[in-house]
Length: 153
Length: 153
DNA sequence: GTTGAAATGAAAGTCCA
DNA sequence: TGGACTTTCATTTCAAC
Image (cartoon, rainbow over all chains, first blue to last red; front, side, top):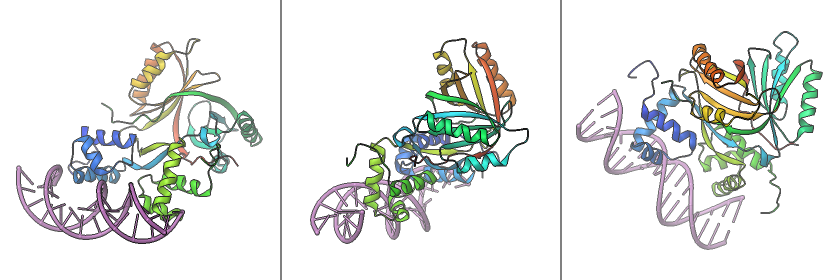
């Protein structure tokens, strides 16, 4: 390893950018796009994985064709203490995509995708029954999503 | 198309589940895991893409090795009208990952990843200078993320 | 959806700067 | 040491069933 710090040069950034756009690129094509040979780019990708900068490769799934017309963020306030019951519920509950423990007025921030407002109402009812207070923001549009994370300048 | 509704059978769901976990699987290996031949699974994936259920393939990048220790949600309230300036700013501003237009108290919900609290303070200062009011929730931990979206029962 | 053949891409070892 | 070439092997793709 040339240095202990995980510094990304312009090539690594280009590689991440291309993979972010399409992670199913062949190494040959990826190399062509960033100006490297296939073995060279393969080695760089391997190092990015080894350094745990690249955690894995996933698929972007649209929620609407799956019958999930409504996306919402729900700020959840529990009754004073951090409740592991919420996490267990979120893990099992269909439609809950993310659960973040946060600072501020709410203890947790949920991201959900549901078929309609009725389903959202049902879900909020469950949270209230569990003793939580909810602050719901329905997503109207998403002008920005999936932007690549690059090292600070 | 056998039906106008985009209904996913158990095989499609298995395919999405496997691709969600690792989108760089070979079609042969993917087929082996879901119990299909390579051409069959290739055709199913092609249909999922065509139906815009699969939007693309991306890479999961860890923010911490890139020097992004802080993730936060920022509820942004503008001065009455929906401001396209915020979207333009969010698109250009380093560290802003998502921007959703939402209902409720805030007009937009941002997700950001930054090196430290100082960078967060700087970013919030920019928003205030632009005339926005911010409600910030710093992410302490993320017990749930990247859960697969399946059709409602 | 499956099987088999031809073309394409990936991986490993070797050589060179 | 890190990148480029070549061979070998796996994978994709197309055709026929």
